[in-house]
Amino acid sequence: MSNAKLLQGNEACTLGAIQAGLEFYACYPITPSTEIAEHCSVELPKFGGKFVQMEDEIGAIAAIIGASLTGRKSMTATSGPGFSLMQECIGYASFTEVPIVIVNVQRVGPSTGMPTSPAQGDVMQARWGTHGDAAIVVLAPGNVKECFELTVKAFNISEEYRVPVIVLSDEVIGHMREKVVLPDSSSIKLVNRKKPSSPEGYMPYKADPDGGVPLMADFGTGYKYHVTGLTHDEAGFPTNRGDLNEALVRRLNRKIEKAEPEIRDFVTDSTDDCDILVVAFGSSAMSSLSAVRQAREKGVKVGLFRPRTIWPFPEESFYALASKTKRIIVAEMNLGQLAREIERVVAGKAPVQRLGKVNGELFKPEDILSVIMGAAK
Image 1 (cartoon, rainbow, N blue to C red):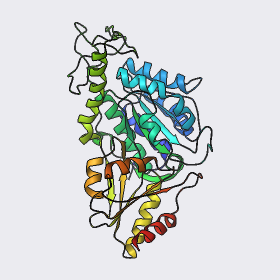
Image 2: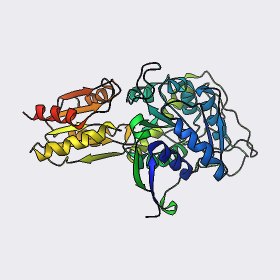
Image 3: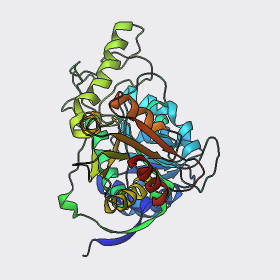
Image 4: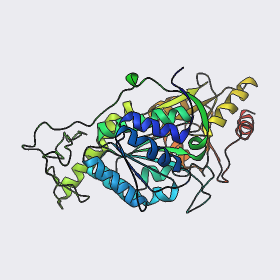
């Protein structure tokens, strides 16, 4: 039990990032993510990493993009208003294929909202916040241990596919403490970006057009190439050719689509024979699981589907399950952002009931249980 620790979610996220090889962290402190910055400022230098507090969130994400271009695994963390400020650079990182990790510990909005209260209102922004058809991956931890595990996974996905990865936590997950048994370092799979072997003839964006991932050279190691947010050719230089933009954007999306079997992740409970299916993620799933188990004790055939990958949503697995149920209940601390995706995937095979709230309070199990029992009548 030497690896057993009492950890806060934000602290577990920091340890996961360091385990994954985090070398550079830049941020602007914002509740309820600030503990990640605090822990990084203390722990990262112990492993030779760099911590920088920037002037704002725009500077923070721009800094980690620059650090990643030099070959350093890089991360930032923020919450609602800061996440909004980062959207342009998230699109830039997606279009220029720079691996970065962004942790968003959600809080009540819009605007400044209620900084110390939980919410899950950034689901759609995480996927569609930046303009254009950008390729994005979003992971959602449901407990403290998963803050560690999914942060490691976020770095691995980012490095392998050269894509920004967002860890979508929330105030409850970020601040609660749990006993966690961390895995041995030797058992954790780590992925590093693939690099070219020689500067001669290097093309920074040359890849299989069917979703290929280009080799990525580090700035400062003898490679000289151009990086721009403008549409660019395989050499990295700007172009106004529509056919090249079409090919580039389709490749960026195709590389994630092809990787979906490896990226998509979810957890189920009591779904083998369920007539009612509850869908929830993050901290809402904890109360949902309790409600499902209480309803089972009352004889109701109900199960839980918890996505750990929000984008891309595990739609094939979900559809196979949902098409066998009589009703779907989506519990989330917003007004139906994930429910919209559920409704799209289900395509009328089963009615979808939205159970949302935006009052800054976590669901109580009885809130969800009463809805389950009502649906079972």
